[in-house]
Image (cartoon, rainbow, N blue to C red):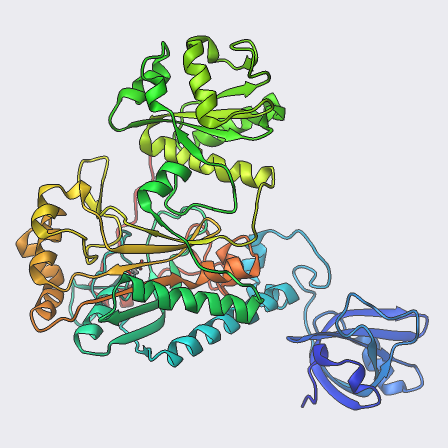
Length: 590
Ligand code: ASP
């Protein structure tokens, strides 16, 4: 049918007769001449129909936006003065000779030929139309180039693409499972994998040595911002490699990818211990493009006559930290109020601040609701520690360390964005030396990564002081986004038992849930480790999209539904009977 893609036509095709197929992007009638912008996945080209070819002209006259057409014509240079520098094909046009309508189209639910502020609901309901928009096409094309580059790299480095099951048992990654009822085993359920974690470990036990998969994962989470219930990982596992080896090979993979697809050199990735990331940035995925840092001032505030500060300053689980914004004394009251509301989202009960107007003149040179509580000596030490200058503002967080880190860590990013403080376009790093466990509000321990991650201490030390144990995990972070994470795994059965024990998983439960893994560890499991990248986030960053929904062809909404297919949906009683399931609808609150 077609001889060329519309978007590929340029001066080198002048005088060629071409056949193109695609959609009518726009139709204009200019004093007896009809212009059609014809679009396909490569781009848009302008086609002109003159009235002297009556049949073709009549057809061109009746087509409407989004009709599917095929046409043949002669490529010619555009006359001087009509060249469109904004269009890749803007130096040429096609003089239409014949045109066939392959299919008509209803009026689109939203215009595709100009920007229009359509709600995401409508876009998702008509996703097949939304995806016709050139910017959406470009994102999915780039996504395909990204996965192609990664596959190429991994294949060249001896990784084997091996599929793992979708109908399986729970693979704990900290979310709820999506369950699938079994018809042949009434009352029993499969779980969709939260990741291929246990299967890839079993593949190492089987000797495959280097595995990868571009794998769908499923997590039934309370949907926080920008998560999808099903998402894609670039999942890797290797045997006989340590952290340095795995981090090295995957760092090179990402560096190559950026070089190949974006022509960007990411350079070498620095490494930072988790404790330092939390101390300086309040986050385990610090955005290093922003120069602001948190500074602990708990010791200075222990004695002040201000409970809001002295309380957390003397609480072993508390923290008082300050964030200096250079030149921030210019922030208005309204901006500060907005930041106070913002930190409230993270549990902070307020946002204390000090504007440094004249540092030589203490305390009067400081403008703040809280300086009156602080002796001059404390103020002076505070300003020294933060190297505060006239014109700066200091923000404070004082609470449990986690609240302070979450609140000031987020504020740091928000201010960085609002004041455009970015010092680099790309800032990658590795975060290492994570704790093995974190303590939930119920006092129970949970694995920070997952329970198959190897600790860097002995089983005895792990059991004696679990909260002090570090893991052999590593995360790759780019611009404040966790791109991927992984670890060296436990390959020793007794260590795996110890971790389960610390997590409060009884011996029976261990056998019931993870018997197959424990069994594999008994039959010659090699030392192994791996990592998984979130493909959607990677593509989001590389395309500059502001949500992962923009880089997934058919995403779900924030409430985990598909507006296009209306999934999830009800099923017939017959199907339920086959599955031995009776549905009890939640009773509405009275
Ligand atoms: N399975 C892990 C995850 O999904 C990644 C890994 O440890 O390889 O986060």
